[in-house]
Image (cartoon, rainbow, N blue to C red; front, side, top):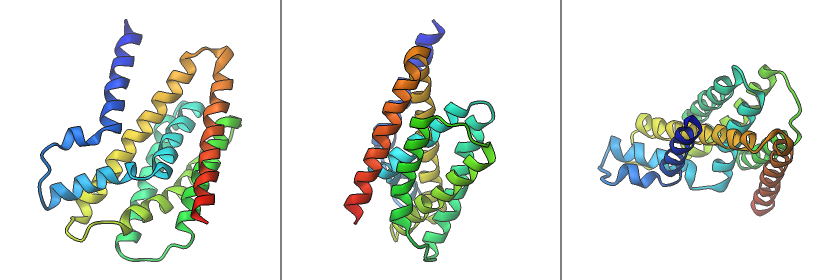
Length: 201
């Protein structure tokens, strides 16, 4: 029964994550529109979506305190990158950093190699600055910076939860298949990242 309830909640969360317009059927102007624009922005590119899901899966694989420390590290560093982008501060190699985040995080999932939590948080935080900068530079002129930032941070948090949910589903597949499924998921993410990188060039 508990498993069914959890699956139902994950399905509901996935619906909200992948169809965010449902939650904003009556979008207004000003700060509300800024929040909606910010919330939708992480879903406008496969690179953002994959990287944020990957952060959740990595957090699940490490377990323990990493379940919240790794996603929080990403969101906070992304907020810093977003502010830099809104202020027009140049950050070099943003698109390269975003593509590499998908490749590296996908490889981390596939290999499942243990790493110190602090190192994982630092790497995730570095990649998050590139993602945040990309969000910040694309803020609409009429949008409030604060509400726009809260929007993309909220969407990012939901994507991290979605990644943790994917990790749970992989775990429920059984110990005999978990490693194979993780390698497949991580490998596909890395391949997608290479494709993003090739397209960028």
